Amino acid sequence: MTKEWITEMEVYLDNAATTKPCAEAVAAAVEAMTEKYGNPSSLHRAGLNAQLLVDDARKAIASAIGAESDNICFTSGATESNNLALRGASAAYGRKRKKIVISAVEHASVEETAADLEKNGFVAVRVPPREDGRYYAADFVNACDDDTCLISMMYVNNETGYILPVKETFSAVKRRFPGIITHTDCVQAFMKLPVRANALCADLISLSGHKIHGGKGVGALYIKKGVRVLPVVTGGKQEKGIRSGTESVPMIAAFGAAVKKLVPTIAERYEKVAGLKAYLLDKLGGIEGVAVNSPEDGSPYVVNISAVGKRSEIMLHFLESKEIYVSSGSACSKGQQSGVLGQFGIRDKRADSALRISMTAETTEEELDLFCEALCEGMEKVRG
Ligand code: PLP
Image: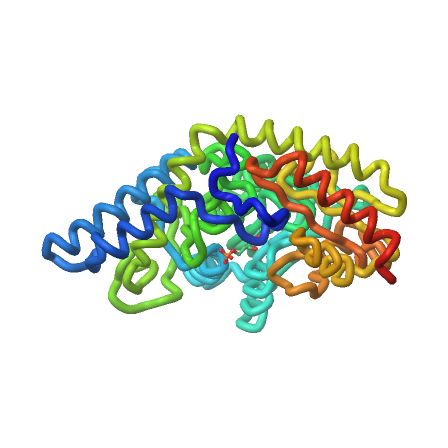
């Protein structure tokens, strides 16, 4: 695998926060901005050309999760997809059933939306991992009842890489409560692990463009045929009336181009990153004071560690001074602890010193060497 689109100078290990757009995505966006700049809703040829770009991207993204084009609703990103899923489905199905079940380790775009729904008459039940830091389908099923309209559970946790048992949970929930709508935030799983809508028993799936080398400001919500989601954004009735607003054709085209590029190599890329994770863990084992917070069987793309005794932010800036970029906690929270690590049993000093290293298949062992060298130096030089 080449490093064709990664800058040579810096060591960028914050790919769970965002990825660098691939050359194909950039080219697709440029084409949409310079040549096919029509409004997809316009009836003339310029509009049609833009519409064809949107259709093409929709087909590629649908096919990547084993769905039909009709199932894909474009949004401005996964934050909006998650809002649309929770607000839209609870509006459609929650007139009498007022309970929503979510995992206690969701991204803020699910957690805060659930909290907001609570202000509007819903009850949100947050299912924590067990003492062993793991999730079990039975705990979600037990949290559901006849008053539940929706369950939302992410596939891969963005802070630790932990893989939640979505398929087992959703199939068990559907067996017992067929009327419950199932939603999964697949942002950190898409193009990394197999994400198939039917296999996951998912009615709704959130995706994001910028986590897969596509570009920022675009996402999608998969909506299973027959499942109702009331619009959150109303207006010109684009996206079959589910999400009004002129489609961001350049970013949609970029998203589609990235998906087309990555689909044929998902397994190969996974193997490569799994090898990088093993390499990294081996090297980290030799650095005194470093503890690993991610589970062994988590997504290899995210490795959470603690440089125990060194505050995350201080270590982060020390690494930054050497042009090495990692994250403290989760990127969205700007260094604020989200509480998710605590849910996984990582607390106090260990949580205060957590760093997230997130890789892509273009990451190299040399970059990990540079990171480990700098971390070693930081362990000596950085004052807590
Ligand atoms: N869900 C997860 C798990 C994420 O990691 C993120 C981004 O950090 C989001 C949702 C939000 O995605 P977006 O930036 O596309 O709004």
